[in-house]
Length: 309
Image 1 (cartoon, one colour):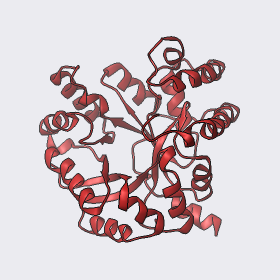
Image 2 (cartoon, rainbow, N blue to C red):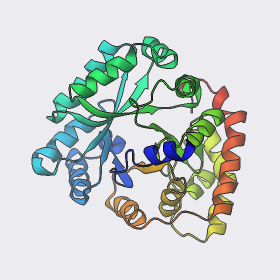
Image 3 (cartoon, rainbow, N blue to C red):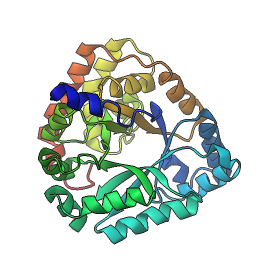
């Protein structure tokens, strides 16, 4: 039975490019609009998937301009979608489709709250609604977004089997400094061989910058974690932090892709180069970081207030 389950799950979401271009930086109005359009067009030309949302500043406006330059090249999209009830979720779908001038979303990233989250945990009506949305071809597939403070909801649902055949995978921050699924959810995802879309490839920037430059890390906990991870990175002998992080994410067999955002052509090229022929990191290197993840999750992550990390 376990082998059958693995065989079935191993073919899900395998069409995603191993690196997905994240568009959060495209919404940064400190960067000239035309420069953001140009980097978007450069990423489009590579053929990778994109990750976006109307929540990312005016990123959709930038993407629309880039898409309009050649509609035959519009990439497949992973789109973050939210809502506390099904009407809000459907409205959120339209808030992304309409500005981009597209007919549907390839992969919807569900960020649920309120009644929808309760229904998800308890096997409620939301799953029938997700099926309806698929049948209407508004969203072709779904992944469930996970945070440390929301992990109990997908854990309960997955343990009971409610998402089977409806939810196609899970997505959360997964990089050397962060693993935003709780320990017990992570273990269950591995046990069931659930596909994973890894978010935030480089955890906010080069590990030495996070460790050594005051204020570079978004939160103090990242600076502290960089202190522990930097020696592991240095011992690996890998020169590029981007390469190290791409290889780390793909060291887990269930990871289908890693999503990294950038507004710089040189970083985009480095992401692409690192994902051309990916070799998993050595087992000992991954194991060191995994052990840190388990400790960090218990010490901080699952105790954190929502949106504090």
